[in-house]
Length: 174
Length: 62
Image 1 (cartoon, rainbow over the protein chains, first blue to last red):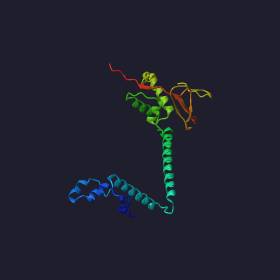
Image 2 (tube, chains in turn purple, yellow):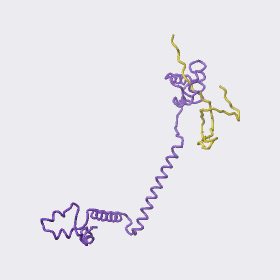
Image 3 (cartoon, rainbow over the protein chains, first blue to last red):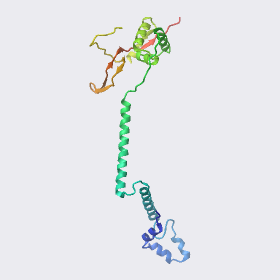
Image 4 (spheres, each protein chain N blue to C red):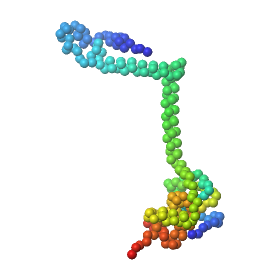
């Protein structure tokens, strides 16, 4: 679509402002003093900018309607569909947010394949784990070494009896 | 270590490690005051132990 901007301006420009009439009546050498930046045919700079904005807006809406695949619909229907679309998008965002909140609450599932090793091998691995000086619970050991919990408890008791491990009292108080 | 096999035996502690063939999804509820409470059920070869923090005994060189 082509918009004839000059037509719009011409119809809205009448009646001319007194300033414009003065300009026309003035001698050619005196006309310069009437020229102000932004003045045009009796319209102020703001008027022109406002008209340009309105024309651009109507062109954009028309282009939007033309590109939509339902050309047979009334503008009111199109507006209704656009509003409906916006509200649906908002609802989807809300659902996404709720879903992510729920996912955070679900405990993480991890598959740990237990190692099938002899008790002596497991004992050696536990010794090595404690050699770093860390304080560990049964569950920490079972998880890190992928060992059966019952086996870990059994070995830890043996290591306690042999004096290699002790209960960390400071961790108990914390 | 005492192992309890009898029905109705219970464990009560701040930290218990558990292991079983099947563990139900946690159920969320409201405990006393403002505390949240979760519960679940272990099924099949369930094993629970009250955890203790363990540390290596370092040998002192003289």
